[in-house]
Structures are given as structure tokens and as C-alpha cells.
Length: 298
Image (cartoon, rainbow, N blue to C red; front, side, top):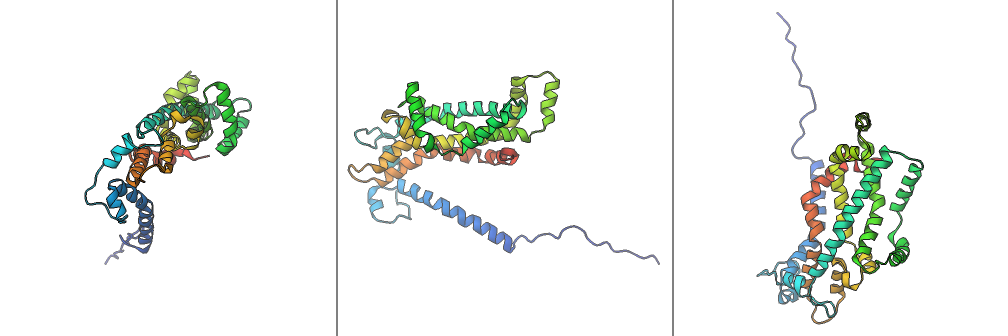
């Protein structure tokens, strides 16, 4: 009679679909999400109410008949001083500031990061160290020198001054991101391209740039949100006729003329934050992918 050997199942035991660890993790995530979404909920429902519904004091409940009249007033009619054109002229100013600042800063930073990692030159490490230090210098320290510089350039109190300042201050951190990302790529790609006779620009544009879409998404999100939400540079360098949306929004909240229209103020807040909110909503997965692909690797 032959002996029959029983085969024991191997491998890890299947995890139960519900455990204390999952309850704690997902419970924490849900509570944290509600904590951050609750103020947004208050802003949205307040912007859809009229003043009579706001005066009733039911701040946590939506109104019976939601209306977008406050949004219309915020975009076209809200006043700051004698200017009653709403925030739509300032939206155009923000677009004019953001688009060239993002394009120029990313173009220069990707070229600089690529050169520092793949085409080292004399004192390149010292130059990179200066860039790292520059990324941690508070903006307020450089504010007055930048005012003098833009005045000497003849662009102070113009949109060009704001674009120039945002481009300059965005270069250190963006160069650090691109340099570290290129350092995480296989060096054999660069060597193979050099053996094939490719030069500086051909390797960058045909080899490295197509592989840099994740880090480009990270850089774009960082720059767009940082520039669009900026208040300090806009109020200092733009001039009264060129204020971006954030400065206009601040003036709306600090204005004390007439009745305090909280619904219009909340609508103006949502309109001001719509661009970075939409950017995160549509490209958030690319941001995470860029971080995971080496955006913060040293």
C-alpha cells in the first residue's frame, strides 16, 4: 500500500475584507477629507443664496432656490472703490501673467537641469549648490532688490515685471526637480545617443523630453498654482491697473462700501480658485505619477 502524502497549501493567508487596520486607515482618510471639503461646501452653498437666506443664519444648509446671480455680479458688477467691472478684467491679467511665466520658467529649468546632470562643466556643482540655496531664500528678502531691478529695467508696475519676477523665483526649485529627474534615468540612454552622434539639443528634444512628461506635469501644476494664487508679487509689481485676480479678491473683501454681500464674495472666491482647482482635478493623476517617477529623488 503506497503512502499518500498530503500537500499543504502554501503562500500567505488571504486577508479578510474588513479588519481593524482598514477601518482605521479609511476612517482617518474619510474624516480628513470631510475636514478639508467642509469649508468648500460652505463657500459653494453661500454663493448660491440670496442675502435674505444668508441673514436667516442657516449657514450649513443650502437655500431653497439656488441662484447664480451672485456669480454674475462677482464676474461683471462687483465694485472695489470706483471700479465696478467685476473680476473678469483681472482674470485676463492673471492669464497674461501665468502663461508666459510657466512656459519660460519650465523651458529654462528643463534645459538647465539637463545640462547640470548630463553635460557637467567647471563649477557646475557650485552653481547647483547656489540654486539649491536660492530655492530656500524667502521671497521677502529679495523683494526690495527686485523692485529696484525692475525699476532700472523700466518695467515696474507692468505685467512684464510680474512675469519676470515669477520666472526668476521659479527657476531654482524647477531646476532642482528636473536635474533630479534626469539623474534617475538610465545613463545608458545618454551614452547611446552620444555614440550615435547626437548633440546637446537633439538628445534633449528627442530622447529626454519625450520621457519627461510626468515631471513636466509636476512642474506645470506647481507653477500654475503658485503663480495663479500669488498675492505678494501681484500687489507689489503689477501696479493698480494690472492687478491679478487674487489682489482684486482681497480688495473685494476689504471694501466696506454699501451692504456686505457675502454671497458675491464667496462667488468671487470660487471664480478666483477655479483654474488651479480644475488643473488639479484633470491632471492630479499625472502629478502623482511624476512624483513616483523620480521627481523627488536625489
